[in-house]
Amino acid sequence: MRVRAILITSLALALTLGAAPPGSSTTTTAVPDCVDLELGPEDPPPPVGVLVECPGIRPGAFHRAPGGCTFNFVFHGTRYDEELDELIDEGLFIGTAGHCIFDEATDATVWTEGEGIETVDSDGKRVGESIFAIAIGGLDFGLIRIDDDREDDVDPAVCHFGGPVASATQRPAGTLVHHFGNGLAFGETVPGRTGRVDHYSGGGSVMNFTGGASFGDSGSSVIDEQGNAVGILVRLAPGELAGYIEATDLELHLTLAEQATGIDFELQTAPLAD
Image 1 (cartoon, helix red, strand yellow):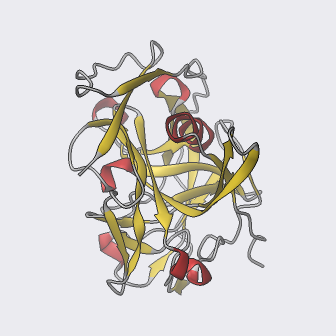
Image 2 (cartoon, rainbow, N blue to C red; image 1 turned 180 degrees about the vertical axis):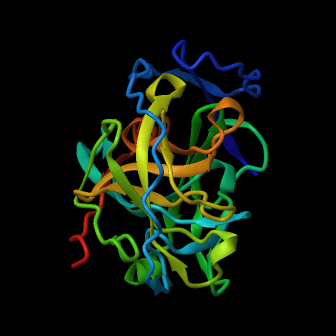
């Protein structure tokens, strides 16, 4: 498999990274300073009680790539070709968590077209293949290029909640956030869940919120009450932060992907659910 590994460093994250493979290129990316949004302990809102299915290629749908996880937001990609002096349409992409693609800590990796890791939907049908992923420290994000023959199956709306209407970065403490994923405890029909932002960690790259999540929710989209795309659920917080759910900051991780791939990713929006 031909891949191009890219080492991304940040003083703010204080990450210990392994050496990049021979012949790889490196990028240094500034990560915003940690924002102090501390909030006293507060019980999260209860889960949304309505059970709904979430098939297809959309935020909240199940996928395997190779781990079983949840899709997040849909993006349209364009790339500027200097020789042609024009924008090239790169098609549609959908996000996931980086650790859903890698099974161990891995620096940012870009795959050439046709060489990525295959992703399939809940029916076992091919969706596309990975183009970018990172899974190390507070950086956890991946992008799947959707095959041309599956684009008609794509829906940008978050299951149950609708949206996203736009993207936004760090949310104030106390902000309510929603996500919809395929956690193991919930089976094939899963409820939407609501949490409450507590604080940011990892130099501002990780949103910590209280709420409900389980294995299989990884990668699911997190939106606020206004419908803004604010993060990607990646894990339950360890150690002294136990009880929190961690979600990577979407705008920061899209910037990393754009720098690594040379592609501009535009979030595909949808109205909020009634």
